Amino acid sequence: MSSAAPVAEAPPALTRAVALQAAEWFVRLQEDAATDADHQACAAWRARAPEHEQAWQRAQAVSLRAAGVPPALGSASLRRPQRLARRDAARALAVLMVAAPAGWLAWQVEPWQRWSASHATATGEWRSWTLADGSRMTLDTASVVHIEFDSYQRTIHLRSGAVWVETAPDPQPEHRPLVVRTPQGSVRAIGTRFSVRTEGDRSQVAVLQGAVELTPRHGHTAQRLQAGEQAVFGSEHVEAVQAAASNAGQWARGVLAVDDMRLDDFVAELGRYRPGLLRCDPAVAGLRITGAFQLADTDAVLHNLLHLLPLRLLYRTRYWVTLLPAA
Image (tube, rainbow, N blue to C red; front, side, top):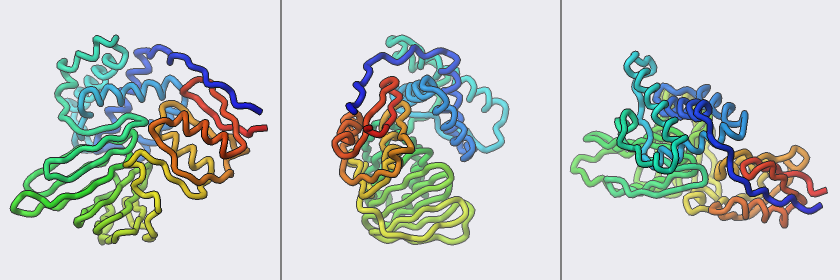
């Protein structure tokens, strides 16, 4: 059976109500007090309807045009002025999300301007920066970090997604450790190249050069990883150390490399790099795939799958695609 042709149609207009919901989720998840349950609830809200995912992508795009996202809003027990600031920020973001193109120029208006700059990427985007100490940082798709360098430590707060770090010697006379912090704990670099990814209630670290030390947020001992090793950790403990996957860090070069991966797992990973919903029918979920795929064009990747596996594509809209059996 031949694959269905893509339907090229413009996304529906974004309503203020949905924009405000997306903005509220976006601002909430930037707080240090955001929990795993908050992230899971947001993911469920995004999956509930295509317009929800559209609004979420718009919120990310707006934050990038602002050259940053809100930093931490403080402790878990927010005082009333902070709650009001969060509400005002969400409303300001929602207004810009539904604004006409001229509305992009409204960045000077309060209260959004009050938030300090950070670094973020939208879905399907990955970007690199040279930090103040000379270290190189690359963010994966839909990732958010907040950089905090002071006299004692160089800290990269990874709030969502994944980051690739190539450390440089600290230019300050007094050495400051470079640390990546996730909701689950911290990763201290020891002259290294490594990646950190956080998702749900776990974080994963892969080391390609040098070494790192993992310390769970509520743990009592640190776990050292050497080059060629990777490990998953939660807030309580580090799981068994394993050999780093051969494709570790390939995403930093715009490549999704997989070796005998289940199709449903491949679709879930590819879906991180494209807006909307990408589904895999259970009838083909167990098919296996091996290869290296360029992430710059995920539609081309989907159509290449038709030559590799007995599949067809069903496009409900350009933002809602399902992989089905060919017959």
